[in-house]
Length: 438
Image 1: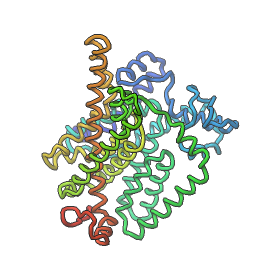
Image 2: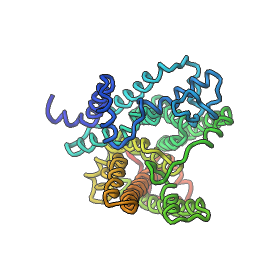
Image 3: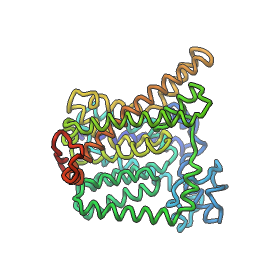
Image 4: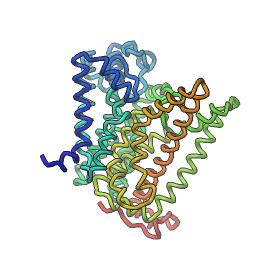
């Protein structure tokens, strides 16, 4: 194999080798080394892998035995209530047992690793090494070690991106995948907006069908759906969490705003959202943003937009654990390509911001450790708060950049062009709506 081909295969090859190594250590009972590697990667592992896969498997088992898993799930090792979408309960038609756990976890993880081969090949050595660093990052290992079902959403998204360049009938399957992803975990419903690229009749048909299916799902599962949403846990804003609520909640705690802390947190949150929206709309309307999207290949553009819709969707609607950062992998090929597009900070810095966030848990923990070396509680707080400020700054900046790409895409899509013709005061991109090249 030629040398240049080897580095082009690094992004998908590196995590496969890493996974094989870790699996070998676990199966040969080198457990101390196995757990030490995971800890040094910035993750606190459970006693057994696939803990999040077991959230679903155990709930299905107990539900088959007649337990109301939204109240109590004795089959789960952590005794966690089931707080996922009721759609997962459709797995009750299968004779699920404890022996399914490792098979299900391995199936999810291996499918995820195989899906990485659908990412566009790196165009140069620097991009290859950055992508490889991304695919073996803390956030990725976090999701893989737990066998988290966000990997299922990732697989559905990357398959959809591969189908968006095909004919209409293949694209229907793509939109079905995205709708299923949305019903499995709610926030991916935002990805349906990529159908704005379709002609009006097709888009309206997809929109109506998707809405009817979503309503039917909500009505048929309403009792369990409401209970699942009500028990979604909340974590500390200073832990391994991200989302638009984190800064407001964190500042409320730091400032000791004991009087109505939720009110202050929400006020800060919505103020920051408005600022983010203003920046993103202005950037999204810019001609250079349209040109940047057209500079990308078709699959790179689709992956960027799906990643943006996933990240923006979860960022503004939920408090998210660190494994969900895995969706940034979808955007990395496009972000790396755009480094060659211009000298603007959005293009030069974005892939490195995404890479830093994929590794954020390890450097967050190292910053806390360095703070502790300074001495006492004050040193610990300095390290933790500085890392928190850097992490939140990176998140808000990168989300605003991704949202700008979504806005640019929407304005230039088939539906966006039609709406701009029909609504005189619609904000026109650069004085004229040029379409995204398919």
